[in-house]
Image: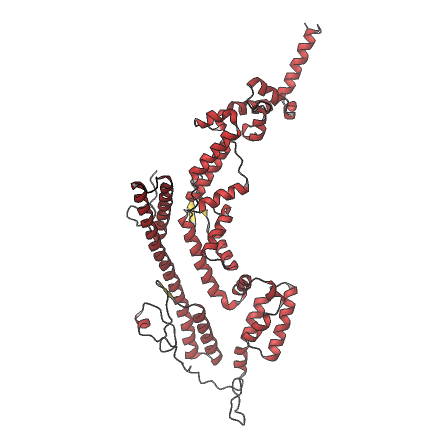
Length: 477
């Protein structure tokens, strides 16, 4: 069967930055292990140390490139979203109402404040065009733009209706129009929608604030200050408050989606360095494993809890079971360690499994797959001393006790795979001597098991014994 050509195995396909980073991290881990085994200050040690330093330098350079690439993608999305808002403002100025012009301009200003452009070299100062628009870094317009945003007088359509204009007062000051009042209090509707899902014990107190805000014409800033005195504000962690507002305020919908996408990309990049892709092929079943939901869930948790990159990695270590179902180099390592433990009669509980997974996630830990494979073997030699010499020679406990297992399964009339190590070894090893029982003594131990009493083998044995007794006493010829 011909191999399917993909971007990963195509001869002329250059590895992307994430692939290169993963390769360099794996190389760095190998070099560190090599240094640990090399005589200090020997020629080989110095050579390996120089190679390790060079690898770390390459990793630092690749991480800058990786960050710049992800930043460029983010900038491109931001530019498109901003262009759409600019178009909406221009349309409002061309044929919209004053209220629509103000609304579009407010939306653009809010977006600019929340989304400063970031260039591939880091934070870049905002520069503005003649109409006050933010310019994209790297463009000719940006090079000639102003660092000070110009004041632009918005031209308003020639609309004169009794519902939007009033006569000047005696002092010559024009009074506020109903449209202006609606714009000024629009935040109330947004925030009422934001907090409507809160539990009753919190919502009732905040609803009273909305009533007062409408009655006294509060600004959003005044409302926010009053909100800080509520039970909800004071009993909710800052990161969770921010997360709630980000995810429930309709005005934040587009910016939060962008933030989630960026965080998801960052988490995916971190996992890819560990050999775990968003989608990959299960080497056993051949099925496609989709890790996208898991990755997005981790990104959502990172936003919710305000985690930085280090805290995200700690979360991956503490909850590594989320990551070891999708294959990858680390996932395969865990599977191999579990198989080794099973073959050597070693039980891995959840705490031990988490320890293994955390150490495999941490390239500085020093304990790799081979370390744990050897550990399973060493534990078996210590726990099952009658078979230690055979295990040391390279045979697994499963191999050296297979005849016992099959005999026990036959006597109890069960599948051999249903026998636990605890049940089997309790009958194989004599606790008084610590030695393995003879096969005859082992059979006796199995027949003392309550399960044996219900087998056909037991009934036949009892029947045969009864017949023998009857013959001995002359009841049968």
